[in-house]
Amino acid sequence: MSQRELAQAVGLSPSAVGHAEAGTRDMTAGVLARIAAVAGFRLALVDGNGHEVAPMSSEAVRDEANRRFPAHLDTRYSDQGWWHGPHRYDRAQPWYTFDRRRDVRDRYRRRTGTPDNHLLPRAGDSPQQRADSRRREYWLRRAQERERAFLAGELKHVGEAFECTCPAACDALDDWSGRPVHAPECPCACDVG
Image (cartoon, rainbow, N blue to C red; front, side, top):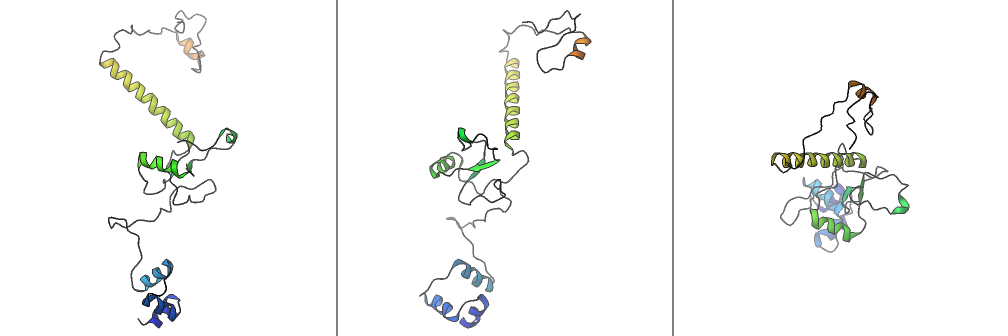
């Protein structure tokens, strides 16, 4: 293409194309992208190893106002050291947050590496659901450790298990929300101890 044809195709003046070819004036990245598109190419960023750097995912998590988080900030779950102080406990806890301070962000990056992208929303991301999941995992680990100790014979000092002999009337009265409830005729007294 001639300079005049290229200028018309990308919306520039012919003199701007001439200056760019002569190296006397720079072009913006947007203009370079339009010129590349006219030639059937596209501009891309590559890392030090020559691999193309992908853009941020459009599906990445958003703030409470449904805005994207800034690309230079690393998002994380809000229950991982939420930023608020005691004067902000009346605010609802967000699902995701980030660190404004670069030294804090860099500390997370040293510990876990630089993320490729912002978090992608998943089911179970709410602070309450994450807390419930951590609690379940904790009790599962404890049960597995007790079973391991039992099978290894480490619990031989523990006496025989107590067997409850409560009549069916106790089960009908008890809602299992606190201490056991017994029928008046119950001889067991299994909650004493």
